[in-house]
Length: 148
Image 1 (tube, rainbow, N blue to C red):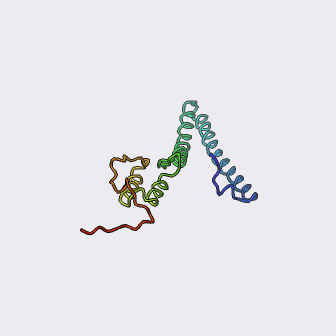
Image 2 (image 1 turned 90 degrees about the vertical axis):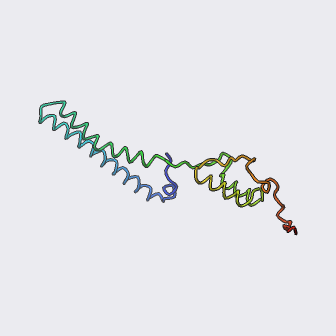
Image 3 (image 1 turned 180 degrees about the horizontal axis):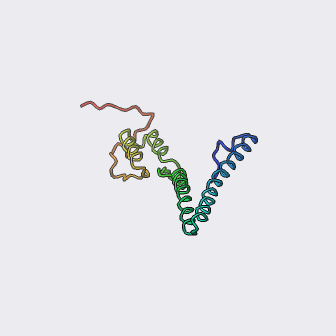
């Protein structure tokens, strides 16, 4: 996992401070875990039972480790899929098709809504498109009104 962009932009003194504070946090967490282990050893010695000490140590470490692992899993996990085509961002491609006149506004909005709703890639069946989309009018030519 690479450090975030803001970390790389820090001056040298700030990077040193951040790393030292991070080490302090790690040592604090390690001392808490070691405290649980030493408490388990003390319980085992006081009760005269190795099993009681192991049980107390396991329970104590589980109480400490399970929430830590859940938070780490939640922070590291990415539940949201960010659909991006290998050739580029599909929304940008859709926008360029609309601006080039290849598709009309209704088709653009329908495809964009479909893309944003289910996160699917923008692959559509061309047979569903209207005739207007298949034959775009040139941008420089004004539209003519036909009288009936």
